[in-house]
Length: 297
Image (tube, rainbow, N blue to C red):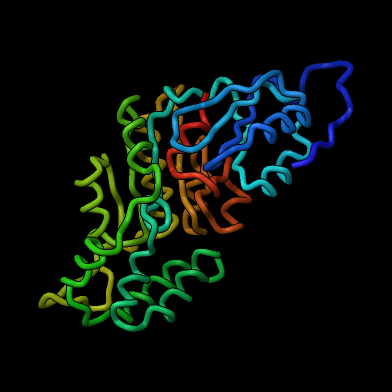
């Protein structure tokens, strides 16, 4: 990391007054912090320890020129966090399931058991990039699963499903401040129901796979949970829980999360597609989910 210090501010208020620069990654070099302080004319450096990653708060930077490029080159996540965005104000935390709360795309793993993993994964990736309609893509993918024994879903849950790093720490912190949690997914209740019981989640919303004689029929039962349904449920709960001063937070990775992210007071793109990173309040690419905790004062 190299410093290109911007000209000194000689008059007027600091353009980022009332906010701190958060820098975090698996490991942050002290010399890089010093360079960032020099680049931004920040007032000081303080460690933040809510997450397991290496995190630091640079107090009231005077400017942010060059910060994005420098952090990208070093492999650091960064965010400008207002002083009044207190963690204690969070009343609702919502997150997507596949590739967000968990590390896998469940439907891709199910398809892999059938030997059609590449075909289904390609449709999934295109949908997450926003290239094709999610509803159409889901129906196409589920149709390919017709005849699969329900027992194979249990294999996916038991053998392949893993929580994203920091997930349990994030949820524990939410419980500690009284925030409600929502797992909302274009995936399936087989997995969201089990995760709700395991993690103590308050609410879930996802699709129901139709089953006959112990096998998938290749159809969705009831209304499809798509981007609009996610955002609608998120909005309902935000109105219920947030009141006048509470904050709603949404975390996602794909294009079908965008309406929900747009409805949130604070949105986080987690290891997300470019279209999501561009539109979210913040992006986390190098840390676990618990790094979301450092995005608050």
